[in-house]
Length: 447
Ligand code: PFF
Image (cartoon, rainbow, N blue to C red; front, top):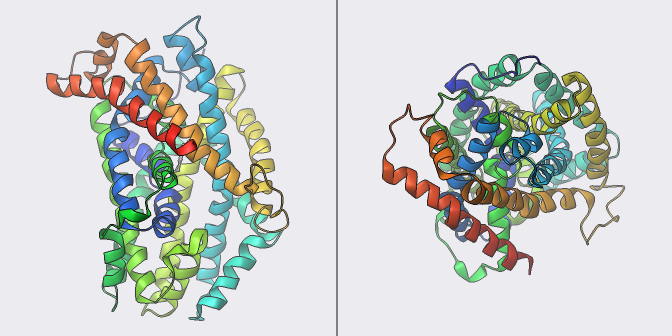
């Protein structure tokens, strides 16, 4: 069998993992969920979940992936031969498929808005005009599909190039650029007159509005934003060599992702309040309010171009990780070429993507469990599949794998000196803390 592709350096692994984590989840989904779930209280609950769950679940996925050096399905076959554990792998494949199906639609919007920015279409500083611009953009039947296909095509090209020459090479350049741009926008937003109300919304909690649904949304968002529970880290981990530090890479990814989410909040909310826009605007928040803000700022046209370019970059470094989960599964499990695996995956994703896109307009009235296609794919994946996928990963590492094997992964085969307390603490968080928290929130949220 040909040698499996792999990452060339630790920095490359970090860029790819952080690239997967930082995406539309931080810059589009997080701000609008904060806006529709009451602000600071949601952020605090979200951060609590990140703090409690991010590391145990990331470690577990990483350990399963690296130890098995296999795709999400075979990983369980390698580590627990002759058991039914490998069916869990299918949850990840399905979750990734569901996510990329609506993600590519929003990815298409980012390209569309980038185009609008470079052709200076945001010169009207009127929210109703920009609101109907967003509405027309997403509800029309054909145009969003074209942009969605461009987005998927770009994703496929990077994944086609493989790990070292595709994913690693591009994310290493894109991530730092992204960070610089988002910081520039945040500084501009926070220095607007009237920005204080936005900061208050972000930092002064009102827990009276918290419901079971808020909890479930915060849990789903934590999983979604960190790219955990859908096998991305497991898949990337399978391309990582034994030397790399699982604990360090996971912590760096979680910190980067959370920093981006907070800075995205700082970039968007102060401006939303400064211009008297409703934070509960929903999925259009970034697309309606920011162009409005850009239209009134000095160098706004330039900032708009940078911002939508950045949103596109953030989206694509995430969508490649979603696609890679599916592609590596098809490629290895059915022994097909990378090209064919990509082609087959795209065939299904395009069908789902078309449904999600049309559900914004033509198919708005078609509902599954009361949700249109877009919301169905979004909510079942984030709020159900990802928590389930994460739950099974920690249960597997905590209860099925042997502790010495887990420690062996943490210490890179005994070559890395790690504090004993740290290793034990991590192990018991995997074994008890993470599964209990996920199970309680998932069950209470669903009830
Ligand atoms: N973490 C990505 C974001 O915040 O946009 C979304 C995502 C990527 C979710 C990869 C799941 C995944 F496997």
